[in-house]
Length: 375
Ligand SMILES: *Cc1c(COP(=O)(O)O)cnc(C)c1O
Image (cartoon, rainbow, N blue to C red; front, side, top):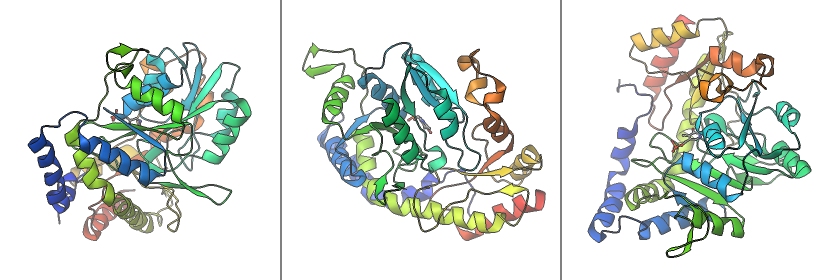
C-alpha cells in the first residue's frame, strides 16, 4: 500500500510535473518574478472559471480577507458576524482591523454558520457577515443573502476551503461559491483544493468600483505610481506561484471530483456504524468539494480513535479542537457558553481522515477498516 498522508501533494505533482515545471521555467527564463504575465493569465483564467468579473490576486488567504474588509470601508466598532467553528484567520482579520467580531454557533449537520444564530446576532451596528464554506461545503447562501438584503449588510465569503464548489440556488441557478456575496476571499495554501507551492490568495468580486479599490489596496494604496490615495498593504501573488496555479486550474474540477469520490467511498464504509456520523452530501450535486473529510464520533471514543489510527500509521486530525469564542485572543464577556451548544459538541466529536486527490481504494479500505474496528 502507498504511504498514507493527510494530503499527498507529491503524487499529485508527479502527474502534472511537465506543465508545472514549464510554467516555473517560463518565469525563470523571463525574470518576471513579480506581476509577470503569468499572474495576469492566471487571474483571467480564474475569472472565467468562476464566472466572476474580477479576481484580485494577493499574497495569502488571510490577506485576502483583510483586504476585502478594507475595501468595504468597514470602520472600527462595526460588528462583523462569523462562525465560531472555523480556522482563526477569519476572526483574526476582523479583530486586527478593530472591527468587532461577533461569533455565532453553527449547524450540526452542515457545520456551517447557523441561520437562526446569525439572525439573532444582528444589531444596529452589524455591517457584514462572513460565511465560511467550511471543509468545502457551501454555506446556506440563499438565506444569508436574503438576511443581508433585508438588513443592508455586506457578505464576504470565506472561500478558502471550497474553491470550485457550485451552489444550487433555490431559483434553480447554479453559481460557483465565492461568486455569490459582495466579495469573497480564497487561499492557495498548498493543501487547499487549488494550492500553489508556497503562499497565495485572491479576492473575487463582481463590483467594478470595489475591484478598482481593492487593486489599489493590495499595492500600497496606489492607483497612479507613487500617489498613495488610501492606506494599503503590500500583498502580491508572485509569478512562480501564479505559474503553478495556472497549470493546476484546468485540473481543479477533476481534483474536486476525486475528493468527492473518496468521500463517497468513506461514507459507504463508515455509515454502517451508528456511532459514526458521516457528512451527508448529494453525489449528483457539487456543493461539497471536501477540502476535509470530517466525521463525528458520538460514543466518546474520538480521542481514542485518533490514537488508534496514528499507531497504525494513519494520519488524522481535529479540525478544530477549540471554539474561537474560547480562544484567549477572542474571549468576550458578551458570549455565554449556552450560545454555542453545537460548536462545543463538535470540538469533542470531530475527526478528520486523510483527504486529497490521490487516495486509492486500498488506502480507503485500510483506513475505514481501522476506524470501524475501534469505534
Ligand atoms: C486556510 C484558510 C484561511 C487562510 O488562508 P492562508 O492562505 O493560510 O492565509 C482563511 N480561512 C479559512 C477558512 C482557511 O481554511
